[in-house]
Image (cartoon, rainbow, N blue to C red; front, side, top):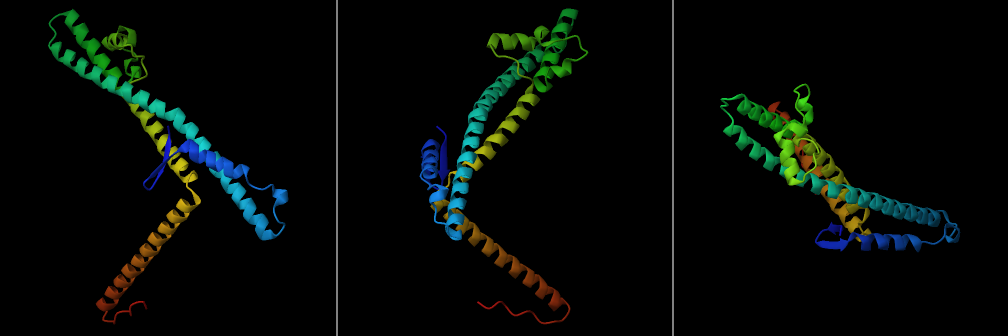
Amino acid sequence: MTTHAHGRKTRPVTTTLATLRARFAALPDPADVPTTARAQAEAGALRSRLAGQIATAEVAQRTLAEYQPKIAADESYLATLDQMRERLQAERLRWLTPKTDLARGHLENVQRSLTAVDIGTAGLDGTGWCLDTLRLGKLLGEAGVAWRGGRDDAVRRLRDARTRVDDAQQQLTEALLTDAEREKRDSAAATRAAKENARSREEKKAAHNAARQARGFGVMAPDAP
């Protein structure tokens, strides 16, 4: 089950999303909201915010459901390729000094297999070899593993899928913050920004004073507490 973590608390996502949906469903009909500008604006903003949170969370959940299994599959596939690469390397060493045409054929087969493991079957173009005639193809068949491209392809797919999952998890976390969590997060961010601005001002003032002293002028007075 996908979970949403904030601080030290972990809640099932479905429960939090259900709470959001319940809050949205319980909102008063726009026609029942007092007609004052403030009441209408606040009610509209809350409705829009909750609808946005729900939509974002739902999209993020679908992305996680789609790409997390792809990550697991490609991680397993990449591990299998690495195991086969080790095996092919060991076989290559055995055929490294061929003395017959048959041995030279075995060596080329293994070398072409290693190329396919690394960069895919595009590396076989024009060679007369294909996956079915390679030692790699036989190893894949013995392992019951379908060919899904070389390591380069698998690494690219993994990088893309992990980026999508990381982005979706971040969006989900943001969408499912409670009002109290959001307020605490924003307050902490504002405090950090204020401290950073104060530190930046002091650094600029110190640099300015150093320049003034270098020119024989006095230093600027410190800020009032």
